[in-house]
Length: 160
Image (cartoon, rainbow, N blue to C red):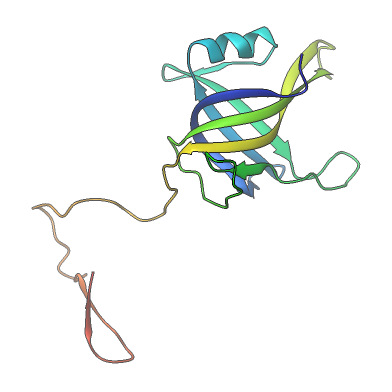
Protein backbone atom coordinates (compact mmCIF):
# COMPACT_ATOMS: atom_id res chain seq x y z
CA UNK A 1 0.00 0.00 0.00
CA UNK A 2 1.45 3.39 -0.97
CA UNK A 3 1.50 6.26 1.48
CA UNK A 4 -1.29 8.13 -0.32
CA UNK A 5 -4.12 7.04 -2.59
CA UNK A 6 -6.23 9.30 -4.80
CA UNK A 7 -9.88 8.74 -5.73
CA UNK A 8 -11.96 10.73 -8.19
CA UNK A 9 -15.72 11.12 -7.89
CA UNK A 10 -18.64 13.34 -6.94
CA UNK A 11 -18.49 14.90 -3.49
CA UNK A 12 -21.48 14.72 -1.17
CA UNK A 13 -21.85 16.27 2.29
CA UNK A 14 -18.35 17.77 2.22
CA UNK A 15 -17.32 19.40 5.49
CA UNK A 16 -13.70 20.33 4.78
CA UNK A 17 -13.60 24.10 5.35
CA UNK A 18 -15.52 23.77 8.62
CA UNK A 19 -15.66 20.50 10.55
CA UNK A 20 -18.89 18.56 11.00
CA UNK A 21 -19.67 18.77 14.71
CA UNK A 22 -22.76 16.57 14.85
CA UNK A 23 -20.81 13.88 16.75
CA UNK A 24 -17.02 13.91 17.20
CA UNK A 25 -15.81 17.02 15.36
CA UNK A 26 -14.30 15.89 12.06
CA UNK A 27 -13.68 16.99 8.51
CA UNK A 28 -15.35 14.62 6.09
CA UNK A 29 -16.60 13.92 2.60
CA UNK A 30 -18.64 11.15 1.02
CA UNK A 31 -17.40 10.36 -2.48
CA UNK A 32 -19.59 8.71 -5.13
CA UNK A 33 -17.27 6.55 -7.22
CA UNK A 34 -17.58 4.30 -10.27
CA UNK A 35 -15.69 1.60 -12.16
CA UNK A 36 -11.95 1.34 -11.47
CA UNK A 37 -12.24 3.56 -8.39
CA UNK A 38 -14.47 0.94 -6.73
CA UNK A 39 -12.08 -1.87 -7.67
CA UNK A 40 -9.04 0.04 -6.31
CA UNK A 41 -10.82 0.91 -3.06
CA UNK A 42 -11.79 -2.71 -2.46
CA UNK A 43 -8.30 -3.91 -3.37
CA UNK A 44 -6.71 -1.83 -0.61
CA UNK A 45 -9.42 -2.90 1.85
CA UNK A 46 -11.67 0.16 2.02
CA UNK A 47 -15.36 -0.37 2.64
CA UNK A 48 -17.57 0.64 -0.29
CA UNK A 49 -21.03 1.66 0.90
CA UNK A 50 -24.04 1.19 -1.38
CA UNK A 51 -26.93 3.67 -1.25
CA UNK A 52 -29.63 4.35 -3.84
CA UNK A 53 -27.58 2.57 -6.50
CA UNK A 54 -24.44 4.65 -5.79
CA UNK A 55 -21.09 3.31 -4.57
CA UNK A 56 -19.79 5.61 -1.84
CA UNK A 57 -16.45 5.95 -0.08
CA UNK A 58 -16.53 7.81 3.25
CA UNK A 59 -13.41 9.73 4.24
CA UNK A 60 -12.83 11.59 7.50
CA UNK A 61 -10.19 13.24 9.64
CA UNK A 62 -10.92 13.91 13.30
CA UNK A 63 -10.20 17.44 14.50
CA UNK A 64 -8.43 16.07 17.59
CA UNK A 65 -6.12 13.10 17.86
CA UNK A 66 -6.48 10.59 20.70
CA UNK A 67 -3.69 12.39 22.58
CA UNK A 68 -5.67 15.67 22.47
CA UNK A 69 -3.47 17.48 19.93
CA UNK A 70 -5.16 19.00 16.91
CA UNK A 71 -4.99 17.50 13.45
CA UNK A 72 -4.31 19.77 10.49
CA UNK A 73 -7.34 20.69 8.39
CA UNK A 74 -7.38 18.84 5.04
CA UNK A 75 -5.78 20.78 2.21
CA UNK A 76 -8.29 22.12 -0.35
CA UNK A 77 -7.04 23.21 -3.78
CA UNK A 78 -8.54 24.11 -7.15
CA UNK A 79 -7.84 22.25 -10.41
CA UNK A 80 -4.51 24.15 -10.77
CA UNK A 81 -3.52 23.20 -7.18
CA UNK A 82 -4.00 26.74 -5.85
CA UNK A 83 -5.30 26.82 -2.25
CA UNK A 84 -8.98 27.72 -2.05
CA UNK A 85 -11.60 28.27 0.60
CA UNK A 86 -14.48 27.45 -1.78
CA UNK A 87 -17.39 25.67 -0.14
CA UNK A 88 -17.83 22.33 -1.91
CA UNK A 89 -21.46 21.63 -2.80
CA UNK A 90 -23.04 18.24 -3.47
CA UNK A 91 -22.18 16.94 -6.95
CA UNK A 92 -18.82 18.73 -7.22
CA UNK A 93 -16.28 16.59 -9.10
CA UNK A 94 -13.18 16.19 -6.95
CA UNK A 95 -10.00 14.21 -6.44
CA UNK A 96 -9.62 13.10 -2.84
CA UNK A 97 -6.18 12.22 -1.50
CA UNK A 98 -6.20 9.89 1.51
CA UNK A 99 -3.70 7.98 3.61
CA UNK A 100 -4.91 4.39 4.10
CA UNK A 101 -4.11 2.73 7.42
CA UNK A 102 -4.97 -0.52 9.14
CA UNK A 103 -6.32 -0.91 12.65
CA UNK A 104 -7.73 -3.62 14.83
CA UNK A 105 -11.50 -3.61 15.41
CA UNK A 106 -12.03 -3.37 19.18
CA UNK A 107 -15.12 -5.57 19.18
CA UNK A 108 -14.08 -8.33 16.79
CA UNK A 109 -10.28 -8.12 16.88
CA UNK A 110 -10.39 -8.17 13.07
CA UNK A 111 -7.83 -6.16 11.08
CA UNK A 112 -9.61 -3.35 9.19
CA UNK A 113 -8.57 -0.63 6.72
CA UNK A 114 -9.67 2.99 6.80
CA UNK A 115 -8.28 6.17 5.24
CA UNK A 116 -7.36 9.56 6.68
CA UNK A 117 -8.65 12.51 4.62
CA UNK A 118 -5.52 14.41 3.55
CA UNK A 119 -6.51 16.74 0.68
CA UNK A 120 -9.22 17.57 -1.88
CA UNK A 121 -8.72 18.96 -5.37
CA UNK A 122 -11.85 20.59 -6.81
CA UNK A 123 -12.13 19.83 -10.53
CA UNK A 124 -15.72 21.01 -11.13
CA UNK A 125 -17.27 23.12 -8.39
CA UNK A 126 -20.97 23.03 -7.61
CA UNK A 127 -21.20 25.95 -5.24
CA UNK A 128 -22.61 25.28 -1.82
CA UNK A 129 -25.43 27.65 -0.99
CA UNK A 130 -28.29 28.06 1.39
CA UNK A 131 -30.50 30.04 -0.99
CA UNK A 132 -33.08 28.70 -3.39
CA UNK A 133 -32.68 28.64 -7.14
CA UNK A 134 -36.22 28.38 -8.46
CA UNK A 135 -37.65 30.18 -11.47
CA UNK A 136 -40.82 32.21 -10.84
CA UNK A 137 -43.84 30.19 -11.92
CA UNK A 138 -47.60 30.59 -11.97
CA UNK A 139 -49.27 29.25 -8.86
CA UNK A 140 -49.64 29.98 -5.18
CA UNK A 141 -48.55 33.43 -4.02
CA UNK A 142 -48.65 34.24 -0.31
CA UNK A 143 -50.45 37.62 -0.25
CA UNK A 144 -49.16 38.27 3.28
CA UNK A 145 -45.56 38.09 2.13
CA UNK A 146 -44.89 40.47 -0.73
CA UNK A 147 -41.87 40.25 -3.01
CA UNK A 148 -41.41 43.94 -2.25
CA UNK A 149 -39.82 44.76 1.07
CA UNK A 150 -39.50 48.25 2.46
CA UNK A 151 -36.05 49.46 3.46
CA UNK A 152 -36.55 50.86 6.97
CA UNK A 153 -33.68 53.30 6.59
CA UNK A 154 -35.01 55.04 3.46
CA UNK A 155 -38.65 54.04 3.15
CA UNK A 156 -37.95 52.88 -0.41
CA UNK A 157 -39.32 49.62 -1.73
CA UNK A 158 -36.73 46.95 -2.48
CA UNK A 159 -37.46 44.41 -5.19
CA UNK A 160 -35.98 40.94 -5.15
